[in-house]
Length: 406
Image (tube, one colour):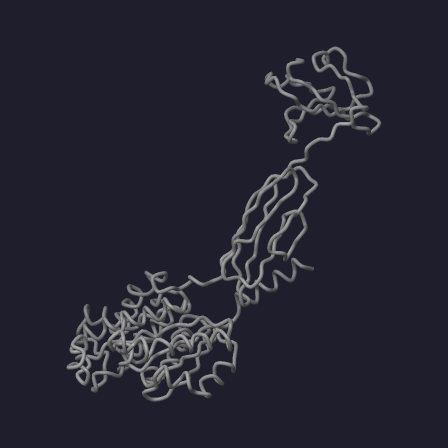
């Protein structure tokens, strides 16, 4: 029954839809980014259910104080929760960012882990304004240009992601790549801040790639963009995101199976070293199983076995396996000795003897013989071995035997 249950769990994991909640403001709401992400995924034969909790101009502080945000967080079992700050706040000087933005980013991630414990937090790294933030340029010169503002956004969003073990969705980096490689693609609306359809398409391709871990060139929906423009944007998402998923934290917090195994004769001692797992399950390879993370298992058999660990987190599983050898050390009854002379078997094979086998002390078979096949004895190693005799009446006897006796 346990094997059947395990198979059902694996099947469920593979067929489950991913649920994504976007928390942000007008940058997220523009062109209905969450809906576009789901639509692009569908065009690539992937199923994403995307929802949003947005408020125009909302900061992390406002979301952290919002009952509506927490109600939305608690409403479903989300797989990903995306956090997008007010467009300027993460670009401000570090001291201001440290008291005005970072604490509420941490508070929101803590709330995600409390209300939606299976959700992976993702920071939506936005983009520098087309000509910088002129309203704050005099107070903080790095904001005077697109390049300066974009650099500050990247630095502070990266810090928020690193501080909270979150993914960093590098939408702004994809925008920068497009700006650097094809200036004919206009990512902005006329205000030089909000995304055009192409800008939102670039964001959607980025999120598609982060969540599905698939090449964005598998997307077949151009969202009414010029096909050449849509293809260029997908390629930018591949270059920046898909080709460097680990750089953005993707997979870093998945459950990772791992355990150590030591053998003493036929007894396995195993210790769980998995990461980010809610529970683990062992298949010892001999028909026995355990959900105890650390323990001992006795095989009682002389053979090789594959020990497999399944590490679960929120219905998803990772596996790893180790090949071990179980060895039975022979116990010799000193009162039952066969007293067989191996050197004379060719001339004097006992009539009531069925077969003979030589073993090392750790149970490895060295040699075997029967009346119709008596091969040469192993090379003289001047060591102690075990001679097992099987008699025609079904009895087995064993005796110590020194190889220098032949």
